[in-house]
Length: 115
Image 1 (cartoon, rainbow, N blue to C red):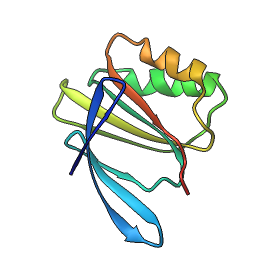
Image 2 (tube, rainbow, N blue to C red):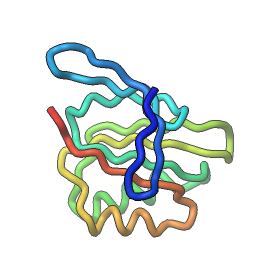
Image 3 (spheres, helix red, strand yellow):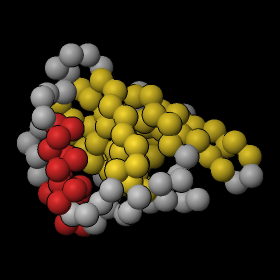
Image 4 (cartoon, rainbow, N blue to C red):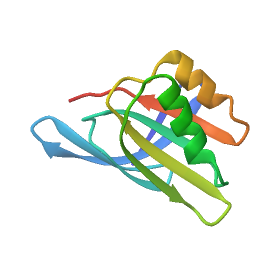
């Protein structure tokens, strides 16, 4: 488990080296994930409410960013949710700014493709 800090923000990450210079992230802030760095990735923490997936997908579509995979996990009904969205293209500054403006959003982090 690692505590990462940047620009006044903290995130707890769990992962492992899987050989050949590759890594696998399996947990972010106590939510299960599976990130390999094979895609550009958007990780969004938000309140679990209807329309969050559609709203974020709509922004990505509007900016011409294609979703490769998406996983949504939550702590419970109407509590907190974590979306892990792997993308074919990097997320633009304009798209992340628009996503971060949603009032129910807690954090939105982009992770650039590493492999």
